[in-house]
Length: 171
View 1 (spheres, helix red, strand yellow):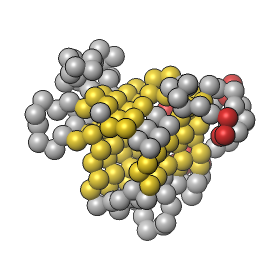
View 2 (view 1 turned 30 degrees about the vertical axis):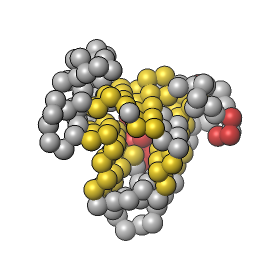
View 3 (view 1 turned 120 degrees about the vertical axis):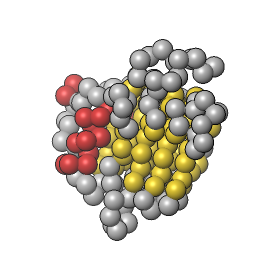
């Protein structure tokens, strides 16, 4: 992406992901600074074809090797109204599907999701579909509530298969 410093970085995860898909649909790295990024109401964060999305940055790094996801917690949240609890209270307004990864064409390009805590969704925290083969690693998936609805899952793989699903935690 044509961002030369943290001072000029996108202020929302949606804007950064959208730019990654437009600027370089073959391969783009999106570095995400620590903090909580909430999906806009009635939306899903889609990882663009070829995008490598990394969390765990403090906001001053110049190399991907400088990030520390354990210290610089980077949260992707579906808690639209910022009122949900880990016990399931106030979750009916959470995002339905929080993160979507779709292989939109026949190119052998892999998306990456690495170094995030992904939390609060009504049905699915991560949905891999359309033949996608992402690399998902170093992530924590937690707090998916569906009120007993059919099809509720933390991570759903349908017509796709991660090339790597490693060092993740699912609660």
